[in-house]
Amino acid sequence: MQHREGVEEGEEEWTQEEGGEGEEEVLRSEEEGVVVAVSRTKDWRFLTLNLNTRSSSEVYLLDAHSPQGAPQLLQGRQEGVQWFVEHHGGWLYAVTNQREGRVGEGGEGEKGGGGDGGGDGEEGRVGEYRIVRAPVGSAHFADSWQSLVIGVEGSDVRPSDVVISDIEVFRRCLAIHCLIHTLPHLLLLPLPPPGERSVTGAESVRGESSSSHACREVVTGGEEGTGLEEGGKEEWGGEEWRGEGESREVEVWARAVQLPERVCHVVAGGNQDHNATDMRIMVSSPVMPEAVCAVHMPSGALSLLHQEPYDRQPNPHHQQQPQQPQQQQRHQQLQHQQEQPIDISPSTSPPHSPSTPLPLSRVPGLACQRVWARAEDGTAVPLTLIHHEGRRTDATGPALLEGYGAYGEVMAADWVPHRLPLLHRGWTIALAHTRGGGELGHAWHEAGRGEQKRRAVGDLMACAKYLVREGWAGRDRLAARGSSGGGFLVAAAVNADPSLFQAVVLDVPFLDGLASMCNPALPLTVLDRHEWGDPLASPAAFRALRALCPVLNVQPGVRYPAALLSTALHDSRVGPWEPLKWAARVREESEYDDSERPVVVRVWGDRGHVAPSSGREQLEDVALEHAFLLRHVGGSG
Image 1: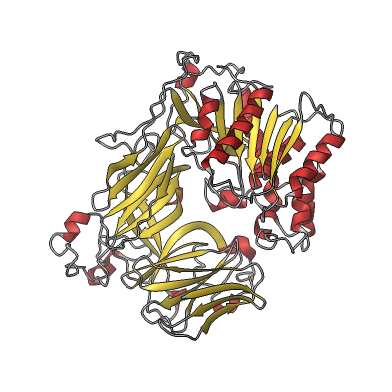
Image 2: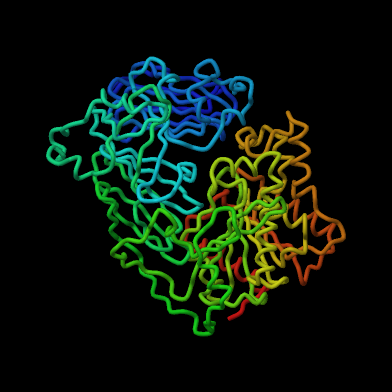
């Protein structure tokens, strides 16, 4: 298979017979802003040809056993609707955000048009991500998708609490990566052996009477050579698959893997073996180095394979303080949409404390917790705090607030060793999970993108005020950091209230949003219209972006915080002129003090948008940022 894109007519897919010399065009797309990707299902049964934009998918299926055949359109494009497809035993499994009751609508007739989905617009057809399935041989996929309504065994978690991030399909298990109340979980759903459908009456199918279960087929036996011929069902456990009726929804029950305490971030390993009984994941938290673990899928048991040890002693200059009653109250169970902090651990339902604790290394003397700030409209905004155990919240210490809030990305509370120098100097580091991200699902992203981007900015400001109000930062000892799209967030908050921060760090920040989104010749303008709006086509989008664009909203005659910006001359995502324009306006229009609150711009002549690959260069960057923050905010140790 060969893939070629960027030709004059549009994106193209090509296939070449093994050993042959000629090329045959298989698929062509002439749509603006389309990115073409070729992937395969984990069992190597199908190739998927994906024509994606930032917000939509068009998926074609190609038989890997005869790739010279014509690709089959699996799902036509609808604006805002995304599909990610896998295969198992004659069934296609997909993760999609198409609203329930509308699966499959649109089909080929909407290909490339981004139609209105029946006249009710994008909001009417887009919902939270869910898992659906359909038989491969179905003549009408639009009429065959069934939605899996996922319950969690032994817990009171509702299906609506499960925010699906990704799935991995193995021969006997569907692994579901998800967030529950903003915290990461891994759910395991047993699958019948490939080629056999388990449709017993044990499954609850919505909309069907119990009498319909009597005619269902029961799966028996395994596949030769798999090692599952004897006792296969008993080993894997769980409910049998069922629900072959006409219902659009099938209730299934998954087992939650008991993750170690205080795990805040879970990443899937390579997991390329479709027949594996063990899968690999990497777990970490802001106070725990990343650990590679194996999950035995039949039992859900977790074992440690490797972790880099952490052996640094706590800072001897930092005096541990006894925990105050108010801090003890912060270690309570998470209650959604309330300002009740919790000790970060997936120990809320479902339970996540292994009976035999894994020998994991953690940073002594540090803790992290989840709290909730309140935005002006009353929305509870999750905020991760990383700090010394027993630290007094007396409104005198320094703090760094980090934010991103764009593209539906979850701001990971993972292991970042570069944070340790500040933490060991008494800083609190806070991660703001604002609207525009994906921590609370698709609706959380929708609430902070496009014309609603102001909400993400307001959320960041609410988090900053929470840190000061609750004593985690002194009023003049709070700094902020944002990178790329997060730079837009931080700079817009600075423009709205320049007194909020003492210092800010803006790394390759997107600061000239209106001009960039009005220039379709720039590399990402067309792709990014779904996130930032299209000011050329929509007056409302123009006004919304104009009101927030950092370059255009510098307050004259007002004292701004000290600012360290960086820009890269080979940046293909953010124009290298953008940080320079904002810096120039702040210097010229604000009450600028070059000695006390300078605005400094680093210009990298040999870099692009992403961080340098050299470890030494990364450390030099971090050292400069920390020196800047310590110079203008200070430390406590």
